[in-house]
Each structure stands twice: as structure tokens, then as C-alpha cells.
Image (cartoon, rainbow, N blue to C red; front, side, top):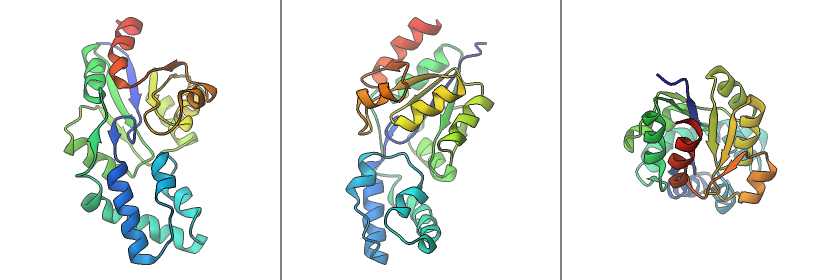
Amino acid sequence: MSDLVVGFDLDMTLVDSRAGIAALLHRLNDESAYGIDVDSPVSALGPPLDVVFGAYLPPEKVASAVDRFRTLYPEVAIEPAVLLPGAREAMEAVRGLGGRILVLTGKYEPNALLHLQHLDLPYDRLIGTRWGEGKTEALREEDADVYVGDHIGDMRSAKAAGATAVGVPTGGISAQELREAGADVLLGSLTELPGWLSATFA
């Protein structure tokens, strides 16, 4: 059995969840007149909800907005989500090398689990509600060799944890920005990951 551990971010790395999240933010605007500029957070998914809502709402309203978002998420945002190209094959490639698959995301863990179940994705461990140093700590705890993500925060967390940072510019962050954030490897999409894994770890 291989000791290889490969971690994946969820939103815009494995799953294109933009349509559902946009619909949910529009619904919150309709319900509560929050005035959220939906296009802005959806164009670069990743930061925690309290950061997203904190840009538009007074501090005393942020927690209730986060709670409402998480409550509505299963109803509104699971069904529209689709796999990004190569996602399933990338995860199966880790399994093919005898490795463990870690899904590490800033998303609320129960909702992240619904995505994995709905899309029938293989994984060994899911850790949710982690961002920044929280992702770094989880990567260290899981002894991850590789972390694959679409956000500059993913690259920084991987580097801080001593994991190989693999960037995919599928979430609105450019390849140049991922490189500047510390990406060790840049791929056009997850379709290229099986080949890289085989060349590196087989």
C-alpha cells in the first residue's frame, strides 16, 4: 500500500458550483435585501462565508446570513453543481497508485459531503470549514504529499504544510497568480493530473 496522500480542494477544483451558489446568493438578496454583488464572490470562490458576507453586511448580521446560506444550500446549490473536466479520473488515478484521497475545503462540511455523495466521487477523508492556516494544519495532520487547488490560498496552505502545491486555473485565478502564490506545478486542468501523478509517484 502506497503512503501517497493527495488532497483536493472542492469548489472550482473538483466541482463547478457557481450556478447554485449564485442562485443562493440571489435568493438571500431577495429575502433580506443584503445587496450582495453576486458576480464578485462567485468569480473567485474560496474565502470563508464570513469574509464574503462581511464585505456587504454589518458585523451583527454576518452570522445569521452564514447560517441561512448553509441552511438553504442543500435545497438550492447541490443539484446544479457539475464535475469539472478530469475530476473523477484524477481522483481515481490517486486510488490507482494506492494513495489516499483527501478532500479539504472551506465549505461547511455537511454541504461538502452532499456534493461528494450527489456526484458519487471517491474519497477517503473529507475535512470542511478550513481556510488559510486551518487548511495548512489539516494537510500536516493528514501528512499530505500533494494538494491540488484553484485559489492562491490553496497554494499558500500547501507550501506552508510542506506539500507539493498543484495549481489548476479553473476558478477565476490565473496561472500567473497561482505561480506567484507558490505553485510548484501548474496544470491546465485536472485532465493533466493523472499523467503528472504517474510520472512523479509511479
